[in-house]
Amino acid sequence: MQDTSLNGLTKDNKIKKKREYGIDKYVGIYKANYENKTKEETIFGGTTLDRKNGNIIKLKIKVKKESGNIKIISNEGTESEVLINDTGDIEKTVNVKGKNYFLKVKVTNFTGNVKIVVAE
Image (tube, rainbow, N blue to C red):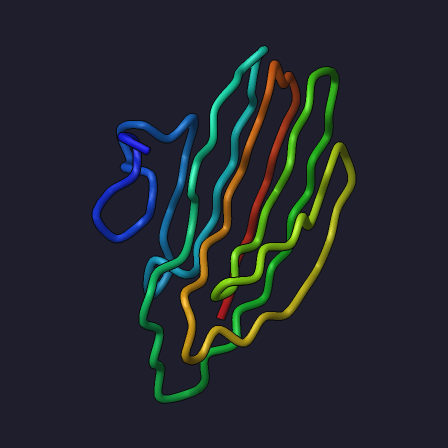
């Protein structure tokens, strides 16, 4: 919890690898190569998204696992969904209007690669 900033996102200096935001902190690109790492990072999201052109975000996530455990978790309001639990890829569209939204990476002794692209 100490790695999380006031708005719920893990601070840049505590992130495993490279995160680039897009037009806001709900969208962007995250790439990481983990080597036997255990941690939880909140990569994208926030508590109040209100865009003029809509509050839809599009997720593209790819995980290649060598060993250990990984979960990519989408927290929408009070609901939590594991998008990837192990290895693989997923594409999903989310409407975040009127609720909190956070995308998390949770790894336990994980070695592998993660690429997350979140677009508006």
